Structure formats: C-alpha cells, structure tokens
Image 1 (cartoon, helix red, strand yellow):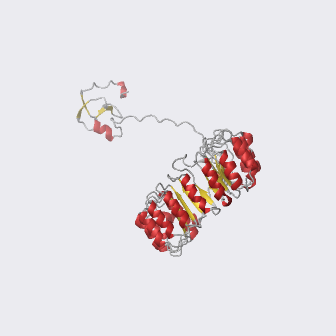
Image 2: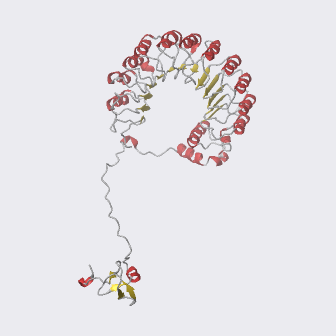
Image 3: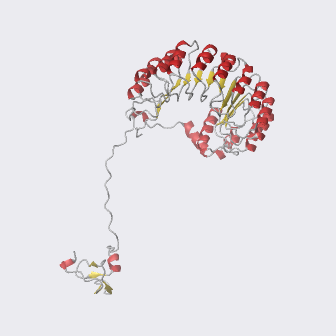
Length: 459
C-alpha cells in the first residue's frame, strides 16, 4: 500500500527522489518515502534500512515435538580415573612419550590397546614397548610395522618367551629368520595374519626353537603339511596349537599330530580352507590319540563334525575339557547333543560356544545347562532360532556364575528373560541380544552389565 493511497507511478516512468532530488526510473522495487509524500531512489531506500531487492525470509517451520531423551539412571556420568586420562593423553602424543621412562607393564598394555583402535603404532613409537628385560610382549595391531621394524623387535627384546602380534600382514621370511636367530628363548608365539611367510621359513623357525610349547596362528595360507611335520618333529614339547583358517589343513595334518600323544592341552583347528577336507573318521581317530589331555577344543567350521564325533571321539576320550567350541558345524542334531551332555562323564565346562547351529534347540540347551550350569562362565548359543522361552529360563536358574552370554537371534528372548538373568546371575558382565526383536527399549538394565544389540533403543 502506497502512502496517502496514491497510485504507484507506472514502471518505466521518471520520478524525483524526495531525499537526494535526483531523477530515477521507477521499477517494481521502488518504495514510497516515509514520511510521505514522494518516492525514494534505490540507493536512498537502501540507506534508510529498507532493501528493495532483499527477498522475504521463508517462514520458519516449527520442528515437531519429539520425545526427550531419557537416559537410564544406571548411565550416570562419572569422572574418568586419573589413569585413564593419562593413558588417553599418552596415546594422543605417543611419539613424544619416551622421555617419561618406565610407565609400568599394566599401563603399557592399556596404551597398546588404545593405539590399536586408531592404528597409531609405527616403527618410531613401537620402541616404547621394547625392553631387553621383557619376557612377554603383546601388540594388538602391527599393521604399520614393516619387515625391518619387525626384525628390530627381536633385537631389542632378546629374552622374550611369549610373543603375540595381531594383524602382522607385513611379516615375511626375513622376519621369521630374524626371530629364529634373535629370540632363542621363545616358547610361545601367537600371530594373526602372517600371510607372507613361506613354508621353508616356518620349518627353519621350528628347528631353531625345539623348546616351543605354544604355536598359535590364524590365516596362514602357505602353512603346508611339510611345516606340520617339521613342527611335530622339532617341537616335541608342544602343548598349545592353533591352526585357524589355514587353507591347506586336511586329514594329513591330523596324522602327523597324533605323534604328540597325550600332551596337547589347547587345540584349535577351526575354519579350514575347505570345510570338507577333514573327515569324521579322521577326527574320531585323532581324538582317541590326543584327547585325554585336552582342555580347550575348537572344531568350528568343519562340516564333518557330527553327532558321531561327539559320541565316538569326545565322549570316551576327552574328559578334561574346560572349553568346547563347535560353532557353525551344522552336522549336530538337537537330540544328539542332548544325549551327549546327558551321558558324558567329562568335567563341567566353563566356556561353551555352539553358535550358528540352527538345528539345536530346547533339548540340547537343557542338557548342557544341567551338565555344566554351576561352572559355566561363558555361553554362546547365537542362532538357535527355535529354542523356546521355557528352555531359555534354565539359564538364569541353573547357571548363576555366568559372565558372558550371547543369545542373539534366539527368537523367544524378551525383556523378562533379561530381567531374570540380571537378577539371578550377579557376575554377568556382557549380554548380546542381536536379532532379538521381542526386546524393547524398556529392557531392564544393571550397572556393570553391558547389553549389546537392543535394536529399538534410542540411547
């Protein structure tokens, strides 16, 4: 609306600005003077605080009301400990910490874990963990350590007896040769991902360490039957063996291992390159020779692990087991596993992993809990989709000492079962419930217990 209800001059006509007295051409952006009468040119209109070219602001949309975040009372914010703050600062400035001197073995391990989270360990700062007096060394991610850096490890830690390296993909023949010469007292070695080490290098390493008691490797495709023979012949005191995800693993390996007799306490042959290369009869015969001393047995991912292996291999020959892992074998039946645990004279188990065996159900779970319930600390039945609510209730009733539990993808799990577990298993630290759609955000919680996999939770 123009002042005094006067019509706006036609666009294109000429008018005189009432402020600067200059003539200007009227456009659709021309504004009336305030106070009237008359009109302002564009520069005078803008200087007066009214920008004729400014677009009107879009109306602000009001955000819909949303539920306020309800943080559970158990997640109260607490101040971090001084030690955790120091570890965080050191991990951020890892390249400058040598001046601190001795940090302490426990804190060094925490720093190593912190560095593994962002793969900050390199050849320059790895020396923080080295010491000529070290007899144990664990590094959780050595992805950035090149072969020369891994060789240096042996030079600066000559008295190591126990070595564990994760993600050691750069390790090659030169490294294992340096260790063969530079780590004469090594008795236990645990490696994840030594892909590049060839068979002759492994054999030379075994011959250089006849006192080796533990050899645990994961993902070594070049480890062949000749390496297996060299290991058995050279390391006669071997007690722990892990050949996990070894591509060439077959029945021939078991034949060589039988010569170790009843001295193996830890055995992991899980997930061979071909799930069919280890036969049922070979497993039964092998367990008859080495089973009497076994405390840890992992045969996961072997297709020919069946009820027959349990009844003819484990049941009569393996009676000292503490940990049993038979995940993703699919040859087990619910009735067979139930009968095995119902009649097995072996000691109660503290760790059991029978995950990803969808045919196992109520009978197997009830028999397992009745056999090992009081001693059971870790239980994994992930993927037992048919297990019923009544069978699951045996867990809180008969396994009061549980610390870790994985019941993911068990369709009958609900809030009430979690409540029973929290109330009746006072030491439980971790519960995994991935794929349990009957659990809601109202699932009960308890301080000190982590529950993973609540899909509908907003916190």
